[in-house]
Length: 137
Image (cartoon, rainbow, N blue to C red; front, top):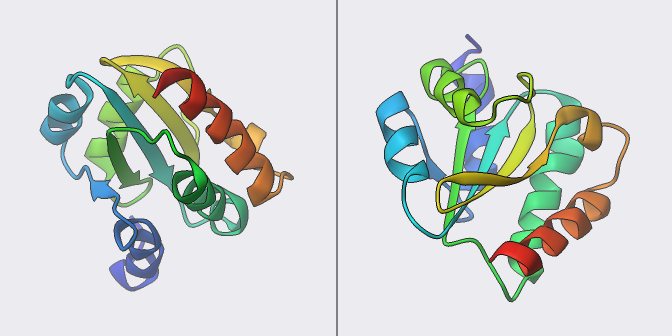
């Protein structure tokens, strides 16, 4: 578990921009079973989360005319039970943080793993998400 003093500002980067936290396994299941589209960001303390994942997600959500119905997040190494439950919905993909998932009607339709975030710019992440939003939202 990471200390709250470290995590809270990183959480706020998303929650201050309209992302709802999923803090329990029950919340994860309740949100992901809803109809429509749900964007899930598994947030992290790593540099690629700070440098490209969070900024890329925020760019995409801000720029897109088609947006997911719900914007959600959980923090790896902090919201552990919730993240573990999210990962059951991401099977067969291995655990990955940060990562970004788009669900439609409870089904995973688009997934960006950590290895697809590392070494890429925030703009590249945003472009990837914009295409997914255009297709599924």
